[in-house]
Image (tube, rainbow, N blue to C red; front, side, top):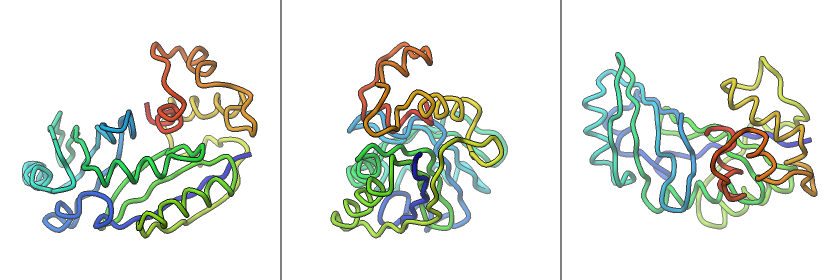
Length: 206
């Protein structure tokens, strides 16, 4: 059994505050790797805005972004590669500690929301306390227990769903663990063996 929760955090405390101030109606969703290592966090993001060129300009001058590249556009949507500043990287790693998996992340109306999965409520509490102790005003919402993933309510892509279900079935989230990251990488056919911290964050979004 695992605990699923949604964590809310103001953009002013995490990332893209200036972008939201210039384009309040913009929406962002992480679609690539959420955390690869300490220097590369959330490199791919899908953005929706009335004018992608204006949004790109806003992102290029946003102090929370250290590098940004527009990969492709389609209508009012753009796919960006970007790096966060140190604060953004720190928050993501705080959210991913204590055997917690970041399942999804999106932002709208100057607020970020992270959907996370933890082995139990104690691990979730540890993440909350770590963020609060570091001075980040996170709020935990919509907490519930989950033993299996359901097709209608998962809010994930097919690949994300199958990856998470495999991890649950093989006991990756059991305490103690009944499967290692190497076991899951072998079964899922991953050519690269990620570290446990990398796997914990990227399992649902790689």
